[in-house]
Length: 276
Image (tube, rainbow, N blue to C red; front, side, top):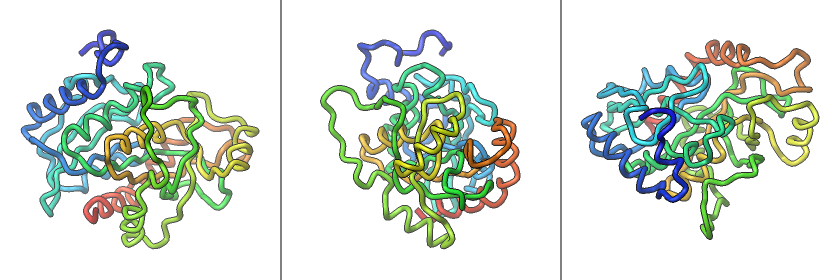
């Protein structure tokens, strides 16, 4: 599907029907009827897919209804079906659409809704993010305990009221801590981007309870909960946020921190997924 004729851009279309069509495409292209767990790999987390088990199929995401080509280096643009040693089917999403791309919230959360339509009951969301909490050093993974959505948007449409009290499922966070008891937890703040936050915005995030700042995840997590999925969120601290570190921020820095931490966090994530 070309960049210009995405069915999700039609305001009269049903995004859940489009997700069901995408799930049917996924089943046809991968030969796998249903998946158990879905995993969105953000900056720094990509190598985890290699450790999960046997790759059954890898397909370009753009062959599946509603998916967009990734705009960001570090995102691979594929959907991958993996069979774990214990027989779980894992859908690895390497095609994240960020809110700052300007395509609207429906496209941002389409991968989550497709995963739910494909049968997945657990959504694992990962990202590379800036640390507001000064104890978070680059290369450190942090569990997301809660989030603050600063995008002024929601994937929910109409009078759709969804309880987000335990959005990041406590049971899944406990399982993650059985794999690595040193994992800390924090509150993730999603900004719109694509500019990095100003020092004043980072101070604001800390004052209102944020520990981590980034440009993804919160909208996807809301959509996952709407779909009835359990949610696990993990941030890789790729840098200290503006005003906390003294050097200018750059995407190259994010990629470098991700590459340096990749072996450790990839093994951690694979072990967590196997335990879910």
